[in-house]
Amino acid sequence: MAAHKISSNDMALFLSRDGVTYSTVVCLTGFTVTRATTEIDAKSFCGPDKLPGAQDNGVTFEGQVMQDPDSGTYSTDELTDFWITKQTIYWKLGKLVPLIGDETDYGTGWISKLDKTGATDAIVTFSGAIGVYGLMSHTTATS
Image (cartoon, rainbow, N blue to C red; front, side, top):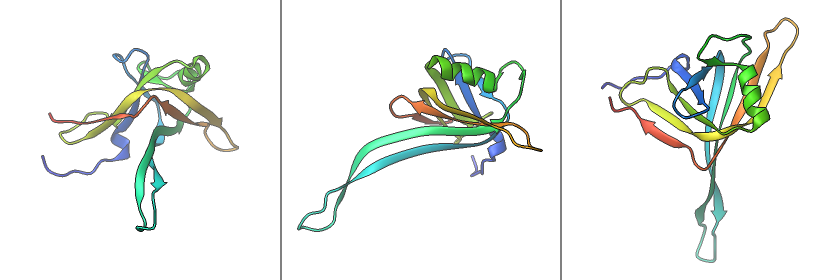
C-alpha cells in the first residue's frame, strides 16, 4: 500500500456500552489523543541523566450538539448519561473505513469531563474527555 495522508474528516470517535456494538459521536470538530511519560531526573556527579517515569494517556474531543441524532450516533444526551452514571465505556478513535496501515487507538474508560457551550449567533458545542483505564491500546490495519 502506498503512503497516504489522513484527513480528520475521515476519523471518528466510537463509543460502546458493551464493547461489541459501537456508535459514533456525532458532528465532531476535533479530537486529541495524548500520551505522556514523566521524566525522572537521574543526574549525578557522573553527569546529566534522565529515566522514564509514570505514564499517562487520555482522549479529548469537541463537537456540535445535535438534538435527536440519527440511530447509531451519540450526542450530548447519551454522553451526559455516561457521565452521570460513571459507566465504563469502550472507545475507539480511528478512520471510519480503515485502509492498510491506518491506526486505531482504543480502550476502556469513562467520561471524565463534559462541557456544553453556547454564545450569541453561534451553534451550541460540546467538549469532553475520556479518563482511560490503564494504558490505551493501539492497532494498525493489515487488511
